[in-house]
Image 1 (cartoon, one colour):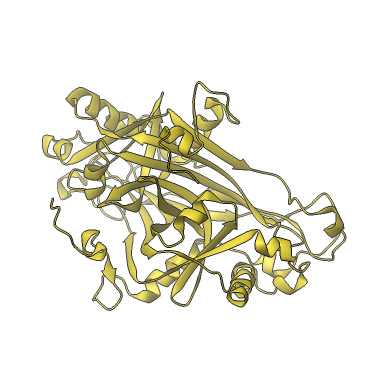
Image 2: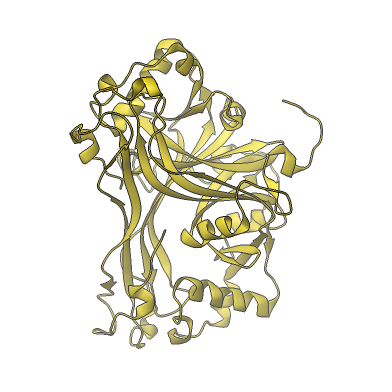
Amino acid sequence: MTDKPAPRTERVRTRRMHQRGAYDRATIDAILDAQPLAHVGYLLDGAPLVTPTLQWREGDHVYWHGSSASRMLERCDGAEVCVTVTLMDGMVMARSAYNHSVNYRSVMLLGRARIVDEREEKRERLRTMVEHMFPGRWDRLRAMTELEFKATTVLSLPIDEVSAKIRKGPPGDDDADLDIDVWAGVIPLRVEVGTPEPDPRGRQGVPVPDHVRRFRIG
Amino acid sequence: MTDKPAPRTERVRTRRMHQRGAYDRATIDAILDAQPLAHVGYLLDGAPLVTPTLQWREGDHVYWHGSSASRMLERCDGAEVCVTVTLMDGMVMARSAYNHSVNYRSVMLLGRARIVDEREEKRERLRTMVEHMFPGRWDRLRAMTELEFKATTVLSLPIDEVSAKIRKGPPGDDDADLDIDVWAGVIPLRVEVGTPEPDPRGRQGVPVPDHVRRFRIG
């Protein structure tokens, strides 16, 4: 423990991308691209809050969005935030309680968020948010109105101070425990995408498009 | 926006349990019990960090644990934290970009975490962590050693300042959009528990116990 000033990078033991890391950018990007759910940490009057939201990555930034009335988005603008994205891949069942674990992939991004306020950039990010998850959908939708555009805020965070944590594989039991008569192994977990449920309101019988049928998480 | 001091409860617009709330304790408990994955927000030198971990609930507290060497657990002890638990239930596909949404259940808990340092209480919490997720497993495992016990830290947070957010159901399209020729509805999501994969090391042929076969998330 030290109170000496240090770069936030160092303090939290993440690494800037130009440093040698346990995980390369391709691995980090793959995790970000596999899981839209993010948990954003920010401060309100000096205490932490963690809000779930959807993130999407484009190049060297991640983005998230919400209502322009959102306290979270307002507080994040220009502030230090932490965006964490996690996929839980399995429960790791060992012969001792201590060696139980979880298989997972997680990315933690740190930095100062900023509101995307340039009009054309913001419009493009809203388009790519939809296209990122549902390729081809944007052009089929009713066009965004000016009111909707103003009521939406987009935030960005550069992928710069970033770390990944990954655990995979079978339990790491102590050798002395391997003959204990208890089931050990991995219970795999993944996000199952169910059969699309058409809206009971509105136009009926619209065929399910590929961008819906192909949607996957993980 | 105001800088006037206010209770944290009020500042973040959660509610104490004795106040009338949109969600009762049974609803909050059901979400906490359905999803072991939590994202814990805490401060490091004044900036937020968000770490994924497993939580479990007993009565009016949630607990999480980790290595006694963990920076996260050390920083959380006695400090204001935010524990957020989220289940993503579906992608909500509307006829406008603006009305797209996500079906989800989320709980946000605020308060001061504390390390469970009383020996018997800590031992009991480690037991109930395993039993909570895998009933009947604890007694089959190799007993925890004193070294393992000391190397593990358990944190607790009372369920007091708490809020839930839930969205469910079909898209909330504007009436004027209902006849647009684009597929709208919900893409359901859930955590699929796969076929247990036995450890390739150690004793082979141990039957899969009920506490593994019955494991579910959601």
